[in-house]
Length: 171
Image 1 (cartoon, rainbow, N blue to C red):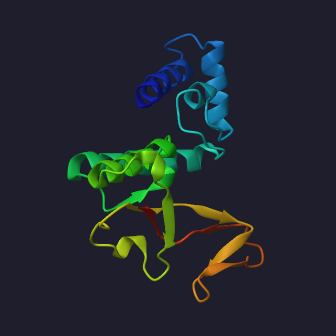
Image 2 (cartoon, rainbow, N blue to C red):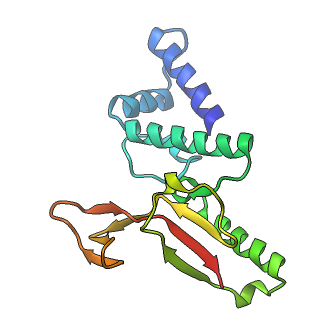
């Protein structure tokens, strides 16, 4: 995706300067950028998103940073689940790690979801003994009530609310 973005942006810049012929595809791409839309050729190879281009770029940069930090510093303590291209594979991998460590058949396991509303993901300093901690999930049309530890009525004019830190514990 990043290679395609780099090449196609360079071509659009050259086409706008008149250094190369402005093809139909380059014209469509330039129009998408002008209209704050993710170019179609990028959408075909990127993560699913309905965001406009400016927000999409911020999201893309955050994903790259998350993955680079993981690569350079080792496995994170807390995972940004929204940053995964295919979060189902991450959840399956978490389950497989527990299955192997405990010598339990994976098809006998499921997740227990513990909402850690007493702390923020940025305050976590160590990994849980089993499972994983995730953040970056959102609720629509309701909110998490930290006092009752349950879902509650959404606040007026707030459609999306971030869910607190979750501990996914295989049981």
